[in-house]
Amino acid sequence: MSDKIFFFGAFLVAILLVTLALLPGMNQMPTGPVSGGNTDYTRIEISGDQLNRMVAGGASDISLERVDGQTVLRIEVEADTLSEDPLRGPHFVLAADLETVFADRKLKITVRARAADRYGAEGIRINYAVGNAESSGWQDFGMTREFQDVSFEYILPPRNVGSEQGYDYLAIRPEVPEKQRAVYVQSVIFEPIGPPRSAVAP
Image (cartoon, rainbow, N blue to C red; front, side, top):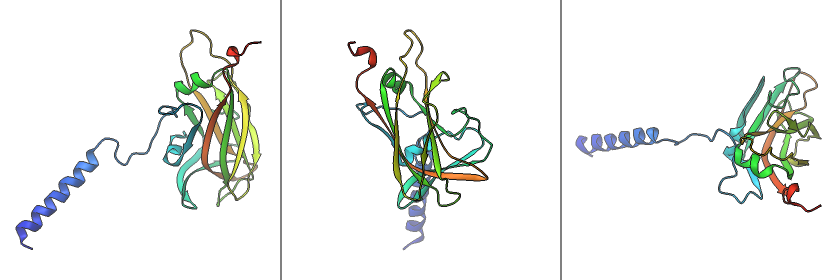
């Protein structure tokens, strides 16, 4: 191979690498609120790279890892570092479209999770918060070293007529009796059940 061909080929490779690096969105993980866009809103799932949308909040450590060939979210918390406020710890922010769809309806929330390999927690806590006003309260579930689905249902309050659209939140954290504890979260699923209560005849 002549020097001219070699250097021309190297030049083309360099241009390709620079172009790929400059393309917006390339190699970037999803962030920001979870939306139901491009769905029929009957089942909204957060899994894979979408788990990167979680906000750490407070003194917690979150990261995406590969476990058993799957992308999972690792949530680690130290004892006595988080308050009971669901927004002051690890949580997902739900976009305004989900706040509108879920309002005044029963919502089933399912989290597939297990104890982490290191500092594995014996339990997980989940709380659905409607803005800063109301919440489901903390729902506690036991954890093992095997992935399992844990779920609960929560009836959301109606939206105030004329109020601005806002955000709802789903907080997830390990139970931490001492030192530090961690859980793996494989997926989160939201399933609205039935029509809004205001649409049901008495």
